Amino acid sequence: MENCATSLFSILHFQFSILNSMTAYFQITEEPLDPAPLVALVQSPDMGAVVTFAGVVRNNFGGRATAYLEYEAFEPMATNVLQQLAAEARTQWGTGAIAIHHRIGRLAIGDTAVLIVVAAPHRHEAFEAAEQIMDRIKQMAPIWKKEIWADGASEWVGDEVERKAKLEAGEEPVIS
Image 1: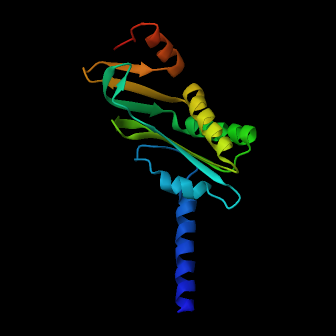
Image 2: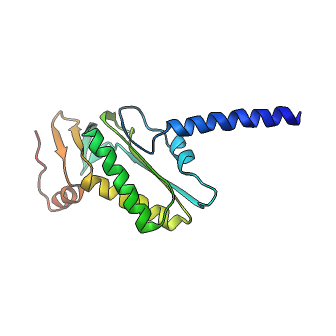
């Protein structure tokens, strides 16, 4: 019986290793995002925290109804930028492994647009690194978001900080 259990464990460990080797740390994809493989990818016995951030398509911005979002990216450069942002966060916060996946294409309300998974010795560093990475993605990554409103109008979204400041100041967004 023990040999069966040992053999089964060996088979499962081998399959898990193959799954991990097939999961990229940094990816731009049209496929739906699943956090479980990324959590498995970054986990390590010396890391006491794994933080998962999921950016999800919401149904409004500034009180205006959103129908859906479209994302585009310059994929080779975007993947390199994601790697660079993870390296910066690892250096600043002393984290372990970091994985970042971002969707492109048409995303419905409730779809996950971005996943950031950070392993760190302690939760504070993992949370800070995840927040920093999300802020920097919006600043640096060649990934563009188009918001399609429920009334059929659309808007390419630039700097989120600037966008929120304009909204709070009562300025109207540029609609196409």
